[in-house]
Length: 171
Image 1: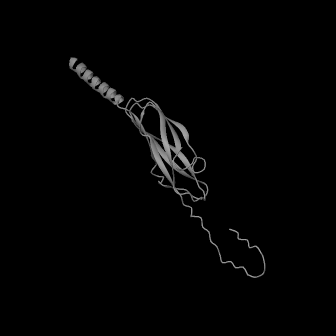
Image 2 (image 1 turned 45 degrees about the vertical axis):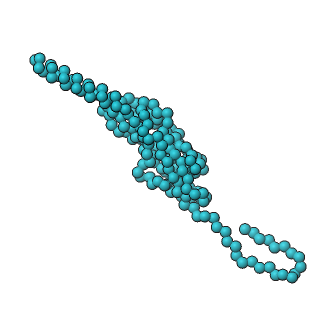
Image 3 (image 1 turned 180 degrees about the vertical axis):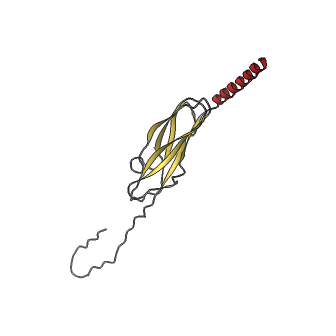
């Protein structure tokens, strides 16, 4: 009877309070380089090397959908020649129970035979909607694996005394 109704009312109020409290907690998005990809990443002489990034959303119960733009930015590496630029938007669905959702994006590093030293680029999160961003960027180093240029000059000789002449040296 009455005791049971009061018990159900207290239980209902407790559950609603927990859900409202969970919904008030902020959802967040962060980015990191996936543990399967080394940093620095190898450059290679030809082809491309795939670098994987994890974009993770931690959401409380009753959170709505969210989105975030993911894009690359040059530091000392140059998009187009050292790596292939990325500019995409990820969308995360809403969550009744809350939890963690991870989506992956990739950046391709271009191999070359130029000695240019190690170079860096960033992958950035921007224009977030629905959530806050707790880790906005990750920096990746491309490890230059090309040898220094070299020059060698062998012995050369010219016989003197034969009059005027020209000697050509080619490098």
